[in-house]
Length: 329
Image 1 (cartoon, rainbow, N blue to C red):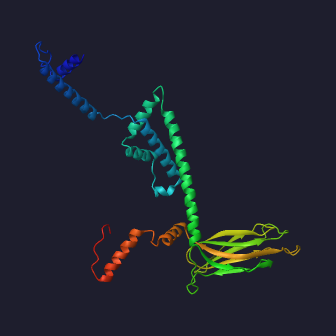
Image 2: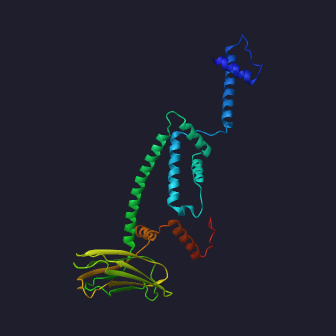
Image 3: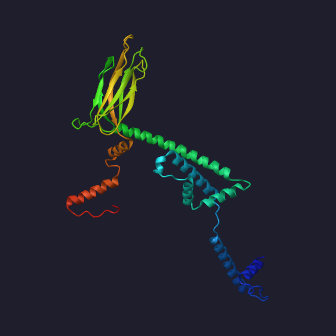
């Protein structure tokens, strides 16, 4: 059978020359001819494969990874619009980029889906089930990392927060009129650092208190004289409980005022209120809190590269030597 295949291939490659093989042939000569023809057949096969420009079939394992990345990328772009940076990206562009990462094209993807759907076993269902399992596994891991990051951020903010006002004064009876004023760490500068401020205290409103009668009013006064106010209502509390709320302060604010207010009805007896342990805390933004905590724990800034680069150039300038050009500047 092998002799017949070799003879047919030889006839096709060089018509007439190898159409008949001599009856008297030595084993060495036949083996040499057979080896050359097999080599030619392999070369032609490789050449035809290389010249083939049709779509390629994607293996099932790779197909599972591609479809998982497509679904995750599409979900990220739908949820986080800032990732697009104002650009309008078609889903086909995202899918094409993902396929390119694995070395395939959209034609290969369509061909594979069509080919798999025509199979009797139809592995697409198993692939999609695998994709769902992969996404669920990734989600569980991401939720765990997110919770751990929240814990670290809360520690960082607690370690780097600054208590700008504290008082152990005990207020009893009427709460209306108590006022806190904060003009920043340097009163002469009269500039309140931007960020989040947390007001906290211990209080009780008595057993006969009515809802929405006591509040904390936050007033922000800008350098231009413009003021903005917000009202934080105190829930009724028969027993002493802790209260904590956050207030956002933007830039260019020269004065932050916190005032306790109470709506009093003349036809009703006054509430027996109690309030103490007042604190106003400046909470740093998460990124800044992380950076300061890193510096506290290690003694080095977060951006070590920039830190050592600055020290290097400062040393050159101090010594009077020339500052060499820096790559990438």
